[in-house]
Structures are given as C-alpha cells and as structure tokens.
Length: 429
Image (cartoon, rainbow, N blue to C red; front, side, top):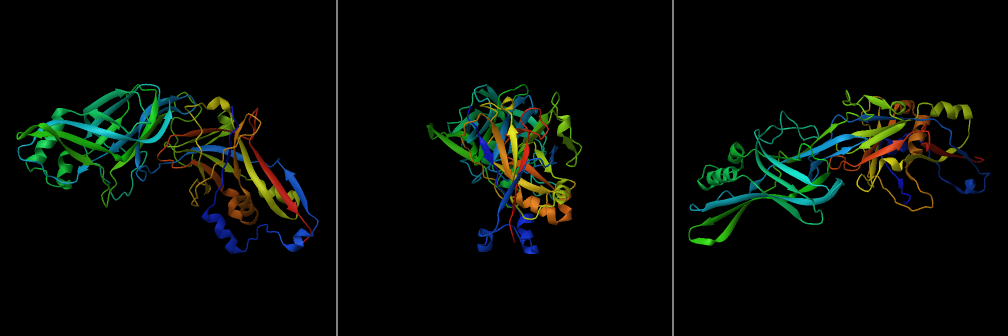
C-alpha cells in the first residue's frame, strides 16, 4: 500500500484582510540573516475536533446529477436521486408524423463512487409538479424535492463509465401523448410544455447496494423516434435537450443518508449541532453530497503561548491528521481535493476559500494522512480576540456534486493521533 500524504493549502478573505490591519508575518531581512536564529519545535498544543452537518448544500451549480445507492459502514445508506427537465429547440413536427418510441440518453460525467462492478437500476419518474424555483429561492439544494407521479422507464445494468452514455426506453403511452400534443399544436413553447411535462426524477433501486454515478446534464437528452407516411423506411428523430432558463436552473441532486447503526446521529438538529470525537471512537468525518464536515478549534492556543512567553514568530504550523486504512478501499477512496473555511462560534461560514491543492507522494512508510497548514489562522488567534471562538472546517471540493468521504483520527486516538506540528522562530531583533 502506498503512502498518500494529502497537503491541503488554503487562502481566505479573513486571512488576507489581516495584513491590512498592521499584522506583520515573518519575512527575513538582512539583519535577520546575521542574527542568532533559534527554531523551537512544539507538538504538544491541544486542539479539538468535531463533526457537524451543513444545513444544505447547493447542487444545481454543477453540470451533473448523481444517481445511485450504496451502503457504507461508517456513513450508512447513501442515496442520490437526480432531477432534470428537457426542452426541444423548436416546437414543430410534420402534421403526418407517426410516433415510434421515446428514449432517455444519460451521458456519463466521469465521476463514480463505490462498487461499479455491482448491478444497478435506473428508475425514471414523471414529476407531478413543475421543476421550478419556489418562493423567491435562487438555487436547488441537496435537500430539495419534488413529488413524482408515474414510473415511465426502468433499466437494470452494469455501469460502464468508460463509455459515453446509457440509454433507457421510456413508456410508449407517455411518449406518444407528449409527441401528439406537440404535433397537433397544443404545445407551442416552453411555457406550454411545462403544463404537460414538468420534469423527471431519476432514482436508484430501493434495495440497491452498488455505486453513485454522475451523469452530465449537457450530454443527456430525450430522443423521440418517428416516421412519416411518405418515407416509411426512414427513421427520424426529435430531441429534447437540457437548457438553463435565465431565471431557473433545470437540474439538481437530492441526497438522503440513513445513518442508523453508525456512530453518527441519525438526524443532526441543525448546523450548530456538533458531535465530539470522544463519542465517535475518536474519529471525525467528512462527506460530500450530504454535507458532513470536520471542524478544528484551538481554544487554549493563545493562553498556552502566553504561558510559554516566547518572543519571535510562528515559522511553520500544520495539522497532521492520520487516515486509518481500515476505513478506505479501492471503491471507497479518499478523493484528492478539499477546501478549508473559517467558521464562527455557531458554525456560520466567515470566509471564502480558494481551491485546496492536494499533493500525492510515495514515502517509505505505509500510512495516509492529511496535512493542513494553519500558520495564518494561529497568527490571527494570537492577535485577534474573536479568533479564539473560530474554527477551521474541512469540506470536499465540489461538495454538491460528489459523495466522496474521509474518516479522520483525532488527537486522542488510541493508535495514530492527529497532531499540531508547530515550529516557532526566535532571533535577535
């Protein structure tokens, strides 16, 4: 097993703004080069880790939907359903056109999670309420939902992600009814289409234990096959494609997790509800799609630094967080990207984050860990009183379009412990 070391680099508005307030971070000068330099390494600072769940995650800003279901011993049953609608480029069919069949083509987006060798099922439902923003909302979320009516298509298959797409035949009754309304001029535009075709819900089988598959909305479409009497041997096609309207995105992913039987709560009361690692076997958790995140706080850092009475600058500081091989596999992989945010006392997000950069190395020792540089955050903790109540949160990159997860050891884990590696630099000023 190779040793994967994940180095998470981050920047945020809260940090960059600090330099404008007169904060001076370490920068060597000619006087420094000639001074008496001393480096002190300290790895005994305490910190706390906890898990909480985001109230919701936006899922309509990505160009994909997730569909599938699998069981995860650490996170429970994970299920994703995609909601989407299509419209044609033009509402015009020959007066004598004869409907033959209707299929939905779902284009693979490349992402998958868990076992793609296991058999899957697609269940396609017609929505009974139009896929549209409600009451002034501006996004769809992982918690959004729309009622569905009739099952109009179903397929059992083994996913082949290397291929372009998967095609499923839909109900002839549904297809012919929609086709005739367009041919006969009952449906002439997108607004009228919404009266008869409100969108689709694409779900996995109820008992499926396989994988989550990502489908590209831009590569997915309806295709009608039809003929005309004058050319009976020529099969013609008429497509509905995915389009964003100016006021409404027309897709999202709903994520549902059943955590019964795991160490995590079945239901988190709200985003302020934290689960301490001493109640979860000294483990913390991160999960895309569902919005499970890990929080780090350093409540005693400033007091400890005051007691040490050190005169100098923070030279380097990083969290080293072990990942136990017991919780990962080739199918439940760790992913390669994270974001780091600053949060307040009530877990409200206080900063934007740049994309975290993850480097993969192959050292001698067989272990996995995440390394998160925290120098700037700790500098702020020393000089800004409010930072003692702030924390850092790890979130998967593109959290609304993946279900990738992490299980992290805390700083009191019985085997490999998380540590704050801290190097302080003193020199004659």
